[in-house]
Length: 179
Image (cartoon, rainbow, N blue to C red; front, side, top):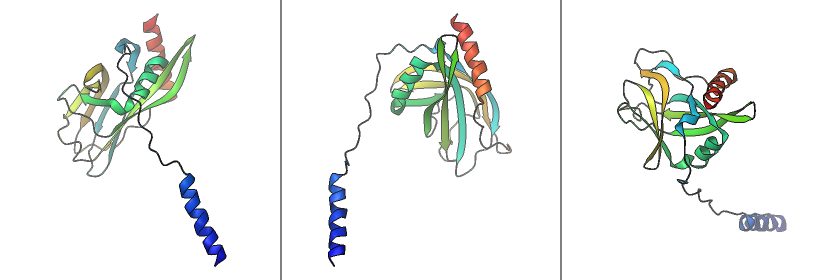
């Protein structure tokens, strides 16, 4: 009986010492001068079939480390919409990927992973080539992502992650544009 009482007491005390406070997200940062000229997309040309349950798509681009940090800090406030049809992508998460160093410059590969059901993809344009990045109600940039299309007869369900080699090539193009 003493053992059971001791275990119960320890269980209750452990709950009292845990920090259960929720962390508030950083507030949106709008005083940064985002330069869309410092972004280089990884173009896709893919036709996807939309399935009823889960559909994934990954969009990749490269930018400078300062802009990557800015985007990552403001990720909870970013939305992505197609320029063609103004369709807001469902459940889009932005992640910082590969670090790429060229000469004295540092670039980061960035990935937008989009996951949505067939219902969430309803209203999407049949195909789109440009993606608008919105920070709350302000446009940050328009990114040419190549051609992404939807077709009920397509076989591809998900685009694979962009290779490190391809990200390096895209970073080199961006680096050359900055010279």
